[in-house]
Image (cartoon, rainbow, N blue to C red; front, side):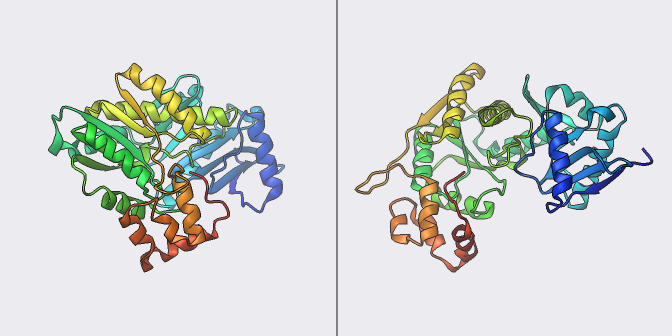
Length: 354
């Protein structure tokens, strides 16, 4: 080990990145689309023999050359990445790994949250982290304990539209309590603080809602790892399975009986996700209600989507927005406060995405 050393790999270092790609490919791993730090371990001849990366507070894309396995190099890579994360202020760390690697990471202090047999294990570096998260949700819900019917909605709302409102209104009409989980991960063009505000303002008139920040356990499709999934369909399926495993545990802790989701016929991701949800939630004793999309009150009558709203915001078409968003959403985007968010949206080449 004395002749090996670990160093950061800059995005501009094409030669090192090509070596890392070959190493990852040899170990059945693809470079993930979401990485903000990468390191490499070099041997005495400047060959890369191990690598690892981070994105936010997750560890990703870790591999050791087959000719050096058994030398404890992965321990060194993980130690380096954990040190880097702590320097960046991230103490609560997560990783996704293949099932046959879970024990190794368990020995390094990571605890299993959920697993999909044969696909993926989701782990964290806090033994009681997920249990404490469930306890927090129960405390937030204490005022409405004992309700006869309880439902849940998981919502990104990028931004909050009349379609989102329609979904929440339906769930509120049909249930005594609605647990509204707001995806708090900041992977969207509209920041979480704004999305949360617009959701809560847009639904303030409805009874029985309990608002929850999703925290780190509800991972968006925008940042779900793809690096050891065989293709895009496998990525979507694994994300759906993982989310459902987490959701079932949340539902049992809160007494949730039904999950409401919006239909999106043109989205491959949502189509696969909803199919798996319809198949698997009943097996766990939960109902799944897929709600047809609300259409705009216009001559075209097209389904309302956040992507269409972002297109109109990019174009500065506030008149067009009036048929697609609640008054509270429209008012915020017309305020001076929205200027930085609008600038970000207008600078984005493609706003038709998650």
